[in-house]
Length: 215
Image 1 (cartoon, rainbow, N blue to C red):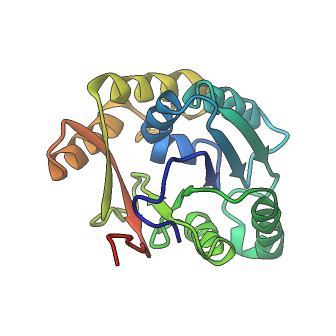
Image 2 (tube, helix red, strand yellow; image 1 turned 60 degrees about the vertical axis):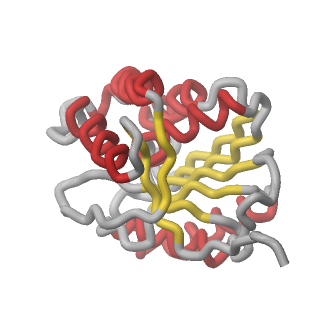
């Protein structure tokens, strides 16, 4: 896994089971990283939505969330909510991603996410990318599965607001959902900000982290 202080980030991987998972869970972090590192390579994989309007939403959204980045996005066609029945296909997609990149950081769903598609993908990532730092992002939903995160990325008020604006702009298919609104996204960011002494933040879980603090 990546060692703390090992050097600059040049390549990252971001994965989601569904279109909008990545941007809801880590959109502010993507904005922050891409602004700070022009030319950052972002290899993104989404397992469902391929060939539909959702894919077009995702492509436009990730382009906006990754300004100036070398973005390489794959949107697969697995059926939403049927991940366990397509385990072999999902595993093959993750292994193909592993073959084409050796990232410095991975953004993925949490392994303890209550949604079976999310947690299944999370388990695949920690298996395929055994020597990498994987940050598990969170998605607020009716399951009530939010836990106690172990890592935080502070967001400036401007970045937090831009994240919400981009979510509203690029995913019109989701606007009807009762949880898909400014209050939900900003409220969670405010709570996570309180937890790390910032105004706003995105939070992540870390399964394993190797430190490099000296001999």
